[in-house]
Amino acid sequence: MSITISSEVLGTLSVTVADTTGTLAVAVLATAPSVLSMALGTPGPAATIAVGSTTTLAPGSSATVANSGSSSAATFNFGIPAGTQGIQGIQGIQGIQGIQGTTGATGATGATGATGVIAATSPLSYNSGTQTVSISLTAYLAKADNLAGLASTSTSRTNLGLGTMAVATAADYLTIASATTTYLAKTGGALSGSITMAGATIDSEMSSDFFGIELSSNNAYYAELEYNQLTVSAPGGFTKVTPTGITFPDATTQTTAGIPDAPSDGTPYVRKDAAWEQLIIT
Image (cartoon, rainbow, N blue to C red):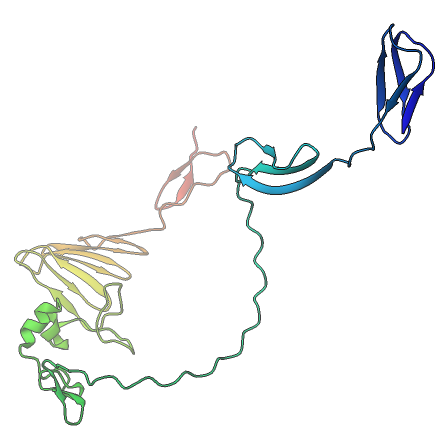
């Protein structure tokens, strides 16, 4: 292909050439001939771009791009930094349990191991012929003997923290009317029979209906508390307190009824002959 310029031009002449993608700039000098001929070569091959390798770089490093080809046939190799590890996410919900798998086949039986050595200490003994272990019971208590085989019953009671009550008889303790026990518990119970508590100068006695205290070794001086009266006695007599009154040593009695009030009618009264009598003032 050729371009012909048939006029004399001073300056710069721009010519668009068909079958090309560029613009041809031609400089024309003043001394140039009136006709200028120029020959253009054929278009060269189109440039190409290809992606080569992609490499992961260390976190925080800069990304890289390198051309391992030529300017007209480029091959770009990329280097991309890895991202930093993020924070751990929340735990997901537990999945449903899978179905149980089938039981595998039973493995082959292993070889029999060597016979071991058995050592037994007393009271155990080992018979290597029959390969059995036995125990001697001579050093142990038999259930049917009810502890009769103890070497020392007194030492056993001491070791168990039992006092003398463990060997006392029932006659040494209080009895109560109960279907389940015959002894008086600390929390109380109904006594049967009289109980006398004696001391050097003061004695007391408890029966089914009274509780008495002797004020000295002379039983003429005593105080007796019964369920319906209190009696304090001495050789000169006694004082008795009952729900109805008080009886003094001289046999006089003061009832608990007391002296009734005088009539409440605005008139003055006086006591006369164990009664109220109107007071008349003249």
